[in-house]
Amino acid sequence: MKKILLIQTGGTIAMSAKGEGVELNPDNWAVTLYERIPELNELAVIDTYPLFFEDSSDLNASHWVNLANCIDSHYEDYDGFVILHGTDTMAYTASALSFALQNLSKPVIFTGSQVPLSSLRSDARRNLINAVEMATTSLQEVAICFNDHVYKGNRATKMSIGDFDAFGSPNYPLLAEIGLDIELNVKPKTLLPPFDVKAAYSNELLVLTVFPSLNTEFLLRLDLTKIKAIVVRSFGSGNFPMKGEYSLLPFFQKCKEHGVIIVIVSQADFDAVDLSKYPAGRTALEAGAISGGDMTLESALTKMMWLMANYDSREEVEELYQTDLAGELTMN
Image 1: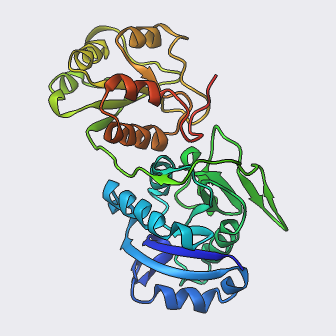
Image 2 (image 1 turned 180 degrees about the vertical axis):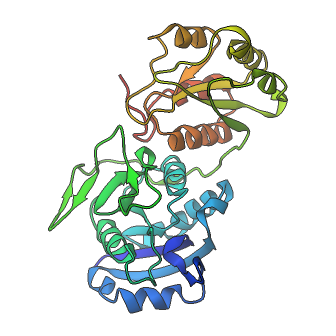
């Protein structure tokens, strides 16, 4: 049987009912796991590793580094990894690890639940069984396994707060579908270079959501000496206000003068930004902006954080940002 390391980071799956809500229960999660799902040991030899216990909304880049290093230190000892994680920021962590875990030849599967494992109607049992089974396959990806679907980690985004079908992958097909059998939609890679980990992320960036009547005076007062990049969530394929007091062009020009990278992504989930299509996008290009293509917000953000921490040259960061590094970006 294959050996799987089950890494616990917290989230709803590790919670217990408490009054009208739920709270993390680090002391009893492993006992609950084996009491509720004893058949896990029929799928693989499983070791559990309580790395940390946090609500996923409290996770940050230091936790991503911790996770990447944990996988690195145990990489040769296991055939696959399952990471239990809260759903709120699962796609951010999966995206971040997809860039840090270089030349991955084993499955790294994120899963969690919408309802705690200790609850009667929990979705945790199915998700965890599926994730462990996926970790025994030939998949060589950082992936999210949820509600019988397996998503590429840096292509997934949380779509629902309350449905068991919590995630979606708007611009990328499923890696696998789980029914009576597991249908893998990807083939194993061959002749991979040695596994390597580059786990470093910079938080010297902002996400700006464009909206009607956005007060540009606030933006023009920003201290850009402490910011290296801004991810702009535009309308449609790269549109934003261009006229009068609400024009973003003066702000983009100020960013250019201060050497701040402007990335344009879309507030729409499906399809890709095309800065050549409309006047706003073409003007953004002239101001030095670059396109995030069809990347999810989670991927667009974590990719920039990773690039800024691992490369010194702005030109190199911009070039690599517009290159598909880990399957996160569709190249035309």
